[in-house]
Image 1 (cartoon, one colour):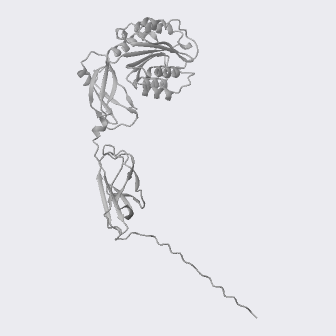
Image 2: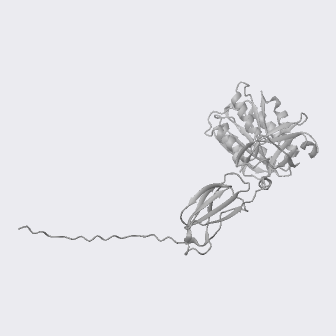
Image 3: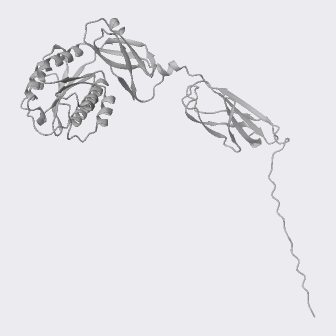
Length: 379
């Protein structure tokens, strides 16, 4: 006999139903807004734009964002936030948000950002640079003797005035073994230069270098003390010219007023730890004008000559390549004339300039005698 057992199974179905608001539930009119960090009403750079639902949030199915008529994002759930990069464009932008309800009704809002007048931005970028002129001319006459260009855009000078800032002059002297035959003559020339009337009220500091640089005299108006710091210097050791230049410019960078460094060397470097690029970067950012008097650098040493020429010209100085010390007095008279003809030229750039070094070209009248910086640094 076969027994049959009947087993019954009961299946339970659980039905999950998502509740979707219907038309009868969304009688209230939705209201949305546009929020963002619009500085002074201007949209620029990367931004987070939020679309808060002021009223009827439970009825919103999605929000769309349009920038200047182009759909840039859709967000299906609150908080409705979008990231958008406007880049460097500071013109007016049309920003529109569309909220779509579950019953497919559309509610919109929009704003137009402000068109930022480029002159407003440029006006905060007033550039003031040194100008050294070796001739007695009225300021207006000097102003008409050169033209400037930045990024191929012409620059109109806002002002050109006599430089009334206090003057600080640094003396950097190469005392390496290779200067043994010239050191005494150079020191005598420097002491004569220190008696120049233009330096009467100036602060002067002295520095020297061979294997390593050192400060010989802190900034002072006491020229007797400055001259004494040059006594008993002996030519010895290898040449670390890059280290010496870096040290001297670094010492002067934070000093107030107009800063001018007069350097004396043979232009060669053998043992420096600092590299050319480090010296170049520091000079560009320092505001220190360099007049570099070099003795005996061969015309065949083109790379060295060009490097020191560039270093000197960045902030409106120059380099003197002398065969020997016979024309040292003439070179120092030249520097003295530049210090007597100190001006400050100020201008607004033709376009908005980012931080960094900006080259500047100058077209100079044939009668102009002086030095104009070849660029400037924007912090």
